[in-house]
Image (cartoon, rainbow, N blue to C red; front, side, top):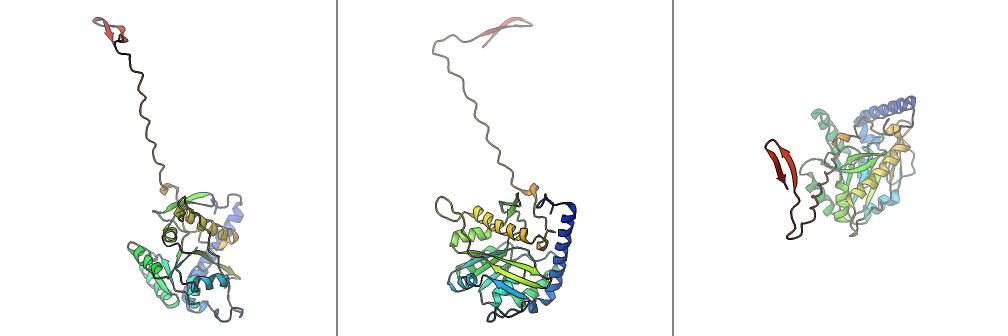
Length: 284
C-alpha cells in the first residue's frame, strides 16, 4: 500500500489495509455459498438481486462471434464471480487457476469451483498445451494476471516494475483473438457489480503482430485503474513487487582496444634508455 500510494498518510494506509482484510474475510466465507451467491437470471437482467452486470453487448459478441477469446481479471472483491457468470450466461470458457498451497484447502476450493463454473485448468507445467487446445477449438480462456510470475515479462505497475505471466499476450499474438477485461466491484458488503470491457486495442510490433510485452502492459494498466477506483477491495496481502527477482541488466561487452598506428616500413624503432642495476639498458 505504501508503494502504491506514497502520497497517503499512515491513517489512510491503515484504513485501506482494514478494508482489504475485510474483503478477504468476506471472500473466504463466501466460498461456502458460491452456488447461490450468483442470483442473476440471464433472461431477467433488470430483476433486483445481489448481482448487477455491465457490458452485456461485449459479452454477447464474445459468446456468439464463433471465435476464441481471452479474458483477464484480478483479485478484486470476490474474484470467483466472473467465471460463474460466464457459465451462467452460456459462454464456453475455461478458467486458469493456481491451486492453494494447502492441499486440504485446494480440494475444497476445487470442489466448489466444479459445482459452479465451466472448464477449469490448473496452472503448471504441461498446462499450456491444454490451454492452447481450448483456444484452437474456439473456446475462451480466463486468467487472473495480477500476481507475481517468476518467468514473466516486465511491466510497470503503480510506477514500479513487476513480473507478469505473458500467457494471454502470447495466445493473443498467435491466434489474433480479442482480449477483454472482467472485474468485480463489491457494494454494500454483500452485493456485486460485474463489468466486461470492450476488446482492448493491443500494441503491435513493426511486423504488425501483437507485441507480447506491450499487450501485458496494456492489461496491467487496466487492472491498475480498477484498483485505484476501489483500493480496499484488492488482495494487497500478495507480495506483488519483488525487485530482487527482476531480470538483471545484461552486461555490456567491453570495447576492443584500439590499435595504435603502425610504424612506417623501415622506420627506426622508438627506444628508451633506462638505468638498471647492471648499467644502462635499452627497451623498445
